[in-house]
Image 1 (tube, rainbow over the protein chains, first blue to last red):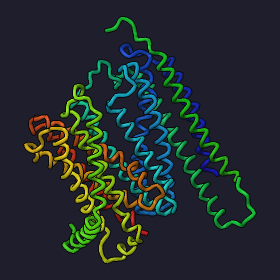
Image 2: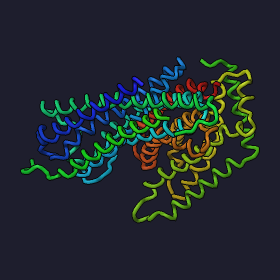
Image 3: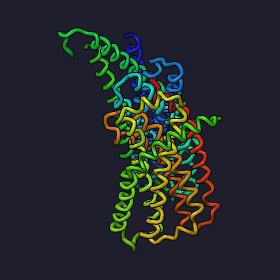
Image 4: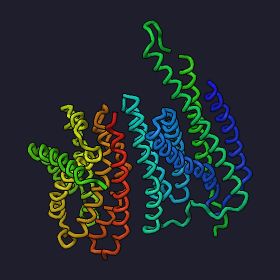
Length: 232
Length: 40
Length: 228
């Protein structure tokens, strides 16, 4: 399957480049004076955040197109983007608190980015659970599209209000793990990381899409297949 | 301004390890699931 | 713009549901009993020296309203499901939008009834002054309820035929309830603490914006949940 092969290659290259990001971030990027070494978590957390959110928007856009065009490829793509988005949301939810603990002293804080991460995670989980609960493929695609669109519409609300919430209720934080004005070297590392995460997204989505396609093929042949065929 | 940089390297290592585990696990999961579907 | 006939159809759908609901009365009764139960538990659990009523009351208020809303939403399409009446409803010569609006109104009336009973109960059990703030409170409650019932009505149409419908609906609805709840609880706290009304302006605007957006989106998406 050509798509799968392409996906696997892209993922492999992306993972290799990720190792490069690790080296660059850990060894060749200067340490931030106020936050110390823990600040370097930023180079993983921010790209994960960008893609966790973008993946949801992509699910929404693909869902809108699906409702109009009814093309199953769009549904497969939305599903793939949702699953990959979940992975990035989990990444956000794990690296976020690990970053927060040394900086804020607590594992959790209702700061803008962590709250957004939690929202995104819940949205993704809901989407995936809904898909798994609906048996009929046509209904499943339609329902998922509805939820995907609602999720996409919700994201700007969450984004806007958690950041607004933060200004109304200022947290007594001295050191905020937000973007300091980045000196060139740090910016370069960040951009490198964001591009690698983009490649990871593409590779993952391609493979997940291929997986859906393969499973649909299997289901089609199993449905019309004869008795006597065993299943692996 | 602190004289010394805070010693929190342990957290950095933890986060980088966790991130690598998550990404590699997912890549592996995709590989295994697609392989199973190809074989069937 | 909805035509007068589609609005009439919506009202017909709503009144059918409301008639069934109020004839049997089990829904409302269970919701009210639940509210009383929650209020009692919260009362036994609190330590008056640690947490004042004023701090607790808004959150308790909204927790109970949330559960009442979920109860209403779970029942929303169950009626039709049990008697396979959904097909009948869909065959009737009324637009999908009317069905949605009708369901929405019925759900809102159900939740509003619980809220009308709940607010005085909270005032009574927790000794908070509600009456002088009744205007702003009513506004907050109306706007927030509309927000999650609008999305909830849309989602319940999808979840009703799934296997764990009663569990799936709250899970899927959760992210969409958190925001209105957040704004509502903040505003309620501010109002009950006698803070100037200008302070809740921001929350009310966010709630109103949320309502407009999601009622429109739900109305537009509802046909996708019932079309074969």
